[in-house]
Amino acid sequence: MAYFGFRQSGGTGSAPTYEQVPVKVAYNAGSIFYGDPVEPLATGYIQRADGTTGTEGIAGIFVGCKYLSTSQKRTVWSNYWPGSDTSGDVEAYIINDPNATFIVNAPGIVAADVNANINYTIGTGDTATGISGAYASGAAATATLPFRIVALADSVTGGADNIIVRFNNVATKSTTGI
Image (cartoon, rainbow, N blue to C red; front, side, top):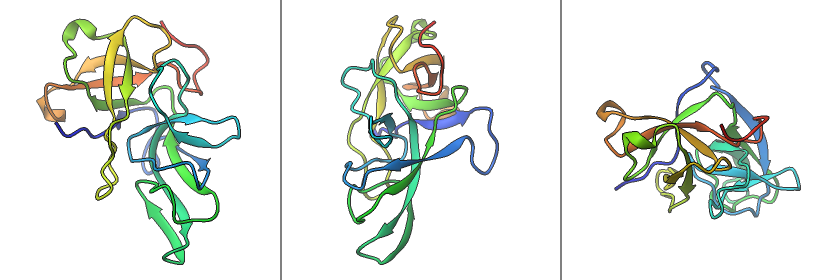
């Protein structure tokens, strides 16, 4: 299965930014792909979230960046941060609106899992396209998991293994869990 990370499917924003906010990525933070969950660092920067515990709050979903490329000697706009090629900070764009919804692959999730919370697995991003390899996994009643399952997505949105989720513990939300 080709995973594609978290793709925004709705929210309260409108074109052209759809709730995108600028944040900083440390130039040595490692790669971040379009659709990856990101987590805040104590330094004020973000990095690609690891998804290992699922209980730390996430900062949002990464949707692109711009940086001064040392190899190309120009400003590069990209849907992913390759993890190097600059000597300064990277301006990243994330979606962190608590009302945003996302379509994501979630193998094995069934109708009975709707309204449960769910974790994610980062997977391997595609350096040719810049698309995330993240997917949702581990539906449970655990209140601290980062996403809540809103609905199963139908074949129009990409297949039976896709779901629609919203943030459960994003940093811009005042509480976690329901």
